[in-house]
Image 1: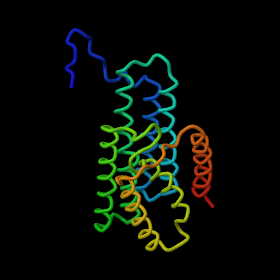
Image 2: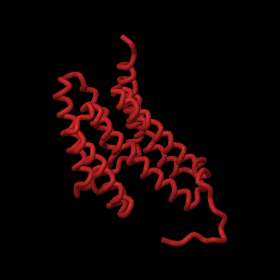
Image 3: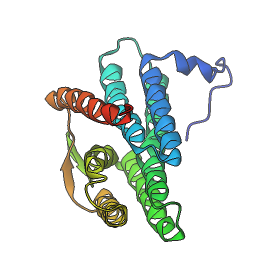
Image 4: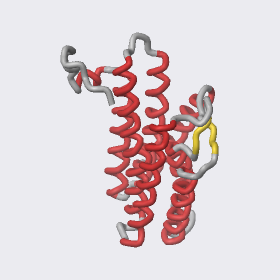
Length: 215
């Protein structure tokens, strides 16, 4: 790693907080924090709303960064690191907490939560080193896909018994974790898929928002 040039004035940490893509990333982190908060309280519809908006902001920060003029190499490097760290919280730690909370923090759910976080860390570390396999192809399933699937699956919460759903949720998240680190190629959704995500986010927000309204 190159050593910093002592003749250059140090750049303040907070100066990067004014960068628009990083503001977008931090907005996603706020949504994740709210999702974690509501998951711990057992308000899963609110947690799902926070989670899907975290995905929206995660996709948006990259689009903004690619179209924003005048960003230097340090800003791009910092933004990449910030995005990766937030992904760990949003798409690994938060789903793990949701699993634990839905399982009433039973010790039986701790191994599953660990697997979710561990595979997420391994996957993002691999991506940070090797990047895309091809121009628009990942190695393994991207972590944000886990959340897109998770918020859809939670629509069926209450259709079956809580015990049965907790078992189904556990198995689903383990399968997704396996795909996250599997040696398979998966497409990177971009372009028109962003507009599909916007629609999906609004629909999911409306459905879960209605569940939160008093009867």
